[in-house]
Length: 299
Image (cartoon, rainbow, N blue to C red; front, side):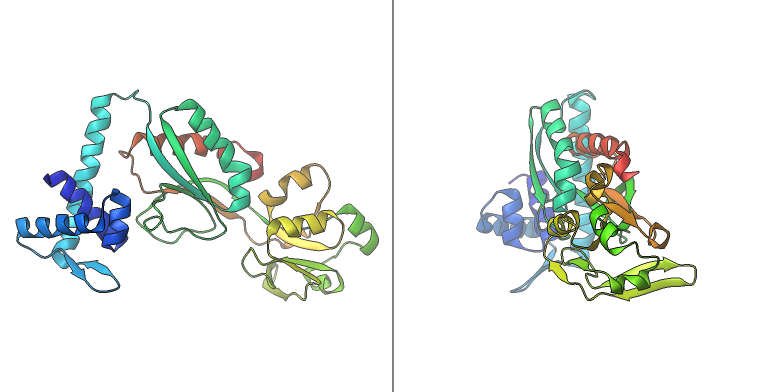
């Protein structure tokens, strides 16, 4: 096995923290990956990985080698791009993740646009309402809503969303408009367990944060269910502004208590590739970022 490929195998095992997971990334058999890493360690004369029954961890020497290997592999990819020419078309597979509703509304049109522009690409779209691990699930690009933790990933801010209270005009005509968060206890509330803090809602007031503990008459497991119940006039729900943007635009829902909304949440495109990364990732990030930044529902 040549040194370059051995380096790729080692990086896959180190980043996924397992020989089986590294083998899946490399599309190789686990025994072949084990032999490749063992041969690399024998050639270097140093132990790169600590092996246990549950995890694989890099040694001190392995951590230094991993950093150098990543840099070398990135430089090789950059050289390939340069040789192919700056106008070379993106090609290859891309895995993109976002939450279910955001993915359907905003990301899927961008994916279709990308695939139509670049016929030598394919995309795996992973739309789930959970935070997906980049390494474990082989993700290239993700949409993240909210403040980002510190990490080695690169991020581009593409907009923001608000957490809004809303109800239908019919419901408000029957039950009246609440004047403050404290009055929500007098209303029929709809809670979605798909979001965080399903029963504890925070509001901003001149005196600081105000926490309202809900006793919802209806609890649903999806945001779509909460939206449907609100549109039908059952009660008041709380969702991110993009989730109800079409219903606000056509008047089926109205925003309540906007003066008590918490600060907006940023929307980022997060990816592993740097400025010199693969053309398939750079092209997709550039395309989707432009679409999202031009969308009035996010800005």
